[in-house]
Amino acid sequence: MRSPRVTGLLQPFGSARRRAQTWRHLLLSLLAAVFILPLYWMIVSALKGPSEIFAVPPVWIPSRWNWNHFVDVFQQVPFARWMFNSGFVSITVTLVALLTHSMAAYSLARLRYRGRRVLFGLIIGTLMVPFWVIMIPLYIEVRAFGWLDTYWALIIPAIPNAFGIFLLHQFYLGIPHELEEAATIDGCSKAGIFFRIVLPLSKPIMAALAVFFFVANWNSFLWPLLVTNATEMKTVQVGIAGFSGQYQNPWGYLMAANTIAVLPNLVVFLLLQRQLMASITMSGIKG
Image (cartoon, rainbow, N blue to C red; front, side, top):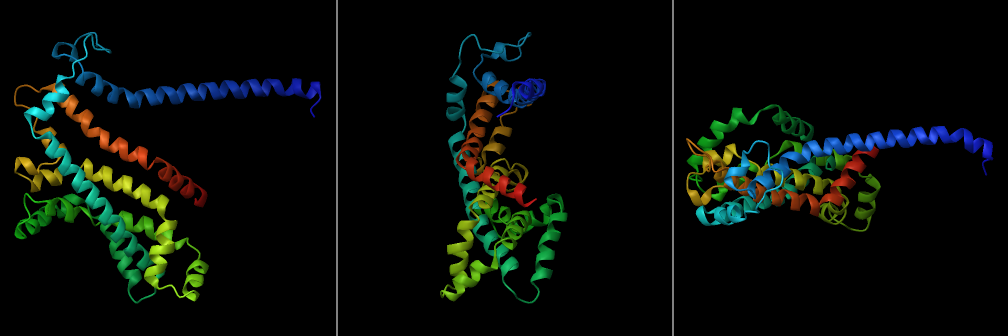
């Protein structure tokens, strides 16, 4: 138990720590407000009337809540179909990529066969090749297959990703060999070890990759713009870009469409937030 004299000496240090903590919270709150402000302005602009969107001084709270923009987005264009296209492509790419990348990474990290190091080096080497370099050859290939304006063109080229294989490969290297040896002694096959032991252990890193794959494909713009011409095959990002006119832009509709388009990313993040934080914590402990 501390004496009153010692407690009195420690009080200035406690007060300084509280002041530093208060300033730190104020700074973090200010930074959070800077990042949240564009999102708030987008949502509020979707609810304003046309005269208030560019009013000077800015109107931070609409005088009259206008929900018509959200209704008109679905009535004037096939927005629901574009949302379905983006959702179907993003979910399919995410699921297939997680399965194939985890199998490839496990093979490269845990199995022993000739040439696996060279193969892993070639896969990592593709990270150095920017998408712009392979974009035209890839488009020619997709067109030769007759995949333009189909889901195949949106899904198949988006699945391979060397970053996902690399991340899973590094995670699998850290799994103790004793687990596999014990499972082998119990008669478990390599496939059984992978599906029953390795995959359950890799839930946090898989959740982080799921968020990465989903958001990247949901926000993808250039490749869907190249391979889709039919209105019903557009993704939501390409469809929203078509809202812009030559002489004027319907800003209310644009803000409403963007507000709706952001929601799936927020839902995926909130659903996988716990696993995502666990993977970040795990990476920090290993680092």
